[in-house]
Image (cartoon, rainbow, N blue to C red):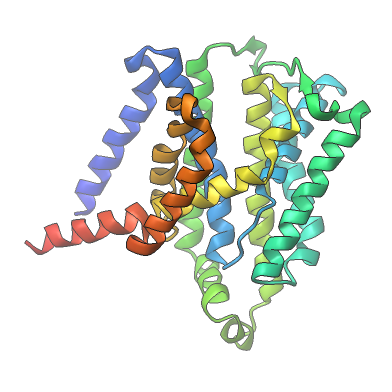
Length: 312
């Protein structure tokens, strides 16, 4: 079984790396890039869901990363690599600052607080025109540049996004299999038990929030140079809602499920642009269907089918 999984993983890695060169289509390469970028974002949301916290601030955290990278390059003259690293650092730093305030509250009040934080960030982007460009945002963000080479090829952006998604996937996989992950599970299921065992629940929750915020910031930093512009509407609370839907659709229990959810849900608005007005309705129907009939998501369904096959 282990050998089969390793071979399957290697074959999948080859397919994913070869994707833009095999399809030879700019639109499909763009779709693959979007899937990878949103997979990283959805993985950051998965961290919060694993400790029982539903955050609506992740769109704003992504926006903070995007504006940080854009301003670092355009106003401070920093190279792309430094600006990109700053996007993740600032995303994590903002989470570190607001975390001790927000994480003291749980349940629906935490959701409302993160929603309010996201709206404050968006209003700051809109109203502080001199710095953030108002509703029009900032155009002309420099393309990614590594060792003096300006990246314009969509295939290279896809490979960067794929590396980011793979990094996020293996980070979460390692965390969930470690003692840290076991404590995260306990914080969600029985925090009182964790406290009775001497676990500093707030410190662990804050660490999760900071890692999650940094991942969202990195996704924003990539977004800025990929699209060459940033605007507030790209980072509203619907971004966070999309991440929740991706997690529910794919399955919260495993990072594999999150990747599955992103691979299925992200391409839909791109493929059905003419029906974008029905996107919210579609998301609502998907959530109802999966919560009712597949609470463990696609990953749970595949796990059951795989288990049945092994029993034969």
